Amino acid sequence: MFAILAEDRSDAEALVILVKRILDREDLKIHKKGFSGCGELRRKAASHILDFARQGASRFIICHDSDGKDPGTVRKSVRDGIGGKLDLNSYRHAIIVPVQELEAWIIADAKAITSAIRSLVIADVRQPETISSPKEWLVAQSRTGGKSRPLYAPATFNKQVAAFLDVPKVQAKCPSFRELVEFVRAS
Amino acid sequence: MLRSVEIQNFGSCARTSFDLDAPLSALCGRNGVGKTTVLNAIALLCSKTITAYPIPTRSNFFLRRSVDIAGVSMTLGLELDGVHYDYEFSAPDFSDSARPVELTEFLTAGNGESRTSVFSRQGESVEALGRTDCIRIPKLTPGLAALISLLPRDDPASLHLERVRSFFAGVRYYTFEVDPPTESMISARAYEEWRDRHKAVGEPAPSLAMCLVYMQQEEPELFDELQSILGPEGIGVVEWIGVHDLGSIIANSEERWGDSKYFMPQVIPSRHMGGGANSFRLPELSVGTRRIIQIVTSMLFDRRSLMLMEQPEDSIHPGLLRKLIDLLRTYSGDTQMLFTTHSAAVLDILEPEEVLLATAVEGSTEVRRLTPDELVRAKDFLASEGTLSDFLEAQDEL
Figure (cartoon, each protein chain N blue to C red):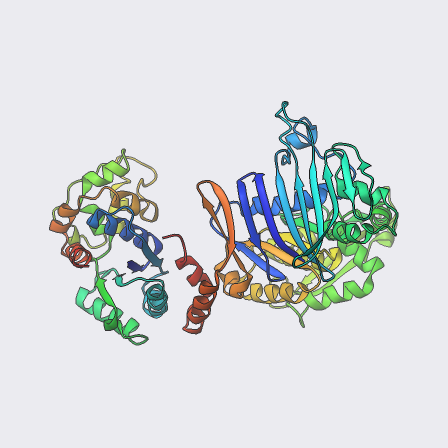
């Protein structure tokens, strides 16, 4: 059984859907916990890993945006933060670091966005992980065309778009997503 | 103490049942899962079955704007003076003209396997403890209320009936006001009229202001207790709370309001808050300050058997919440508390045993306590730096 720990609730919800899509298993039972930011994730994830393991979880996905930092440094910081409280190596896990933000994976499939929100059409982006703030970019794109309010609210729509994402397409465009796919399939 | 609840066919409660083990319990769950419906159901059953008024049906004008009890079946388990009671009430679906309009009620008393029927009612016919003959009562009159009126005080059933009635009469549902109260002053005449009805038939106070005036006038010790709880030595939300008698002021002014005497509750907020030691009338206080005063006043003044409360945390600072919940817990020995909450700050103050989880499963409300395994895991989780709200959030459906 998988357990997902992410920086916020909407990321955790989107990841649950993505793992099910990757394995094509809608019935998969997945534990999840979304924190209130990266500090809380580093501080509290260990307690949740222990509890999820007691409930039968055997594969742990810990997701933390790189937010402009080097992904390797972020991964080490997460590992050190959680590892100070438990031996992370005793648990089969992957620390997934979407380059910039998880929304880069969303942007990778413009068609999926339109499938989830019919009135929203965004340009195709070849390398989403080069956008410095994908969340802001996505919200700004959804506001173009004289709209007074953005159509895209990440906390609401990320999981809805995740249900339509073309996994091979996102994998090809986003190396960080490839790591997620490989860990999930290897499990 | 309310020990168990079973609700059928009431709003989203298709078949909802749960136990209560703690004198203070918090019902938590997402919006719309039916938490309010559960509180409403308990309050409605308790209020409708202790008066001799006919159980309202759909054709009743009042209920077109209220909650319909038709088709509802409920059982409440109570622990009163060391005796366990189960009170079961079923009302038919009055819109089904093919079915007879028959209320069904059962009240049993006893402990463990040893149960005694206090009364059982089917339609107009009631069998009561110690009686061989059936008692006939009007078809829509609650049996509990009817028997209390009909049976002598020394009847074998009366003690049980009175215990249950007394508990039900003490159940009150508090939504707490959202709009500021318009009433800052109360005329002596209005106060005296209500006071007499309150003393005679227990009419509830129509406003916070009326409660405060009554406590100050009639129960000064209780008012002192209120001041001490709210004041600097207690929760610390007020520096002073009192009731001014405005009789002489108005009598001396040019403006005559028709009554020569008015009462005006006033509050000096804590020196840590804004206000600069000035006194304020109730409508001038912040929503949060007023809510705390209202909760504490209700708790002291109403002396309820069961307080059903909607989100007592609203508009209250998390630092004050800890004091407030501790206070409610302290008083929950005499008054059982069941409240809804969406607040992580409140959940983090509670013990895992005090939490009830509400969810909607296929549109129907389900309520449950944490399982023994969840309780063990929750305690381990709390011991390793986690918080109860975090733990509960992660127990969400998979």
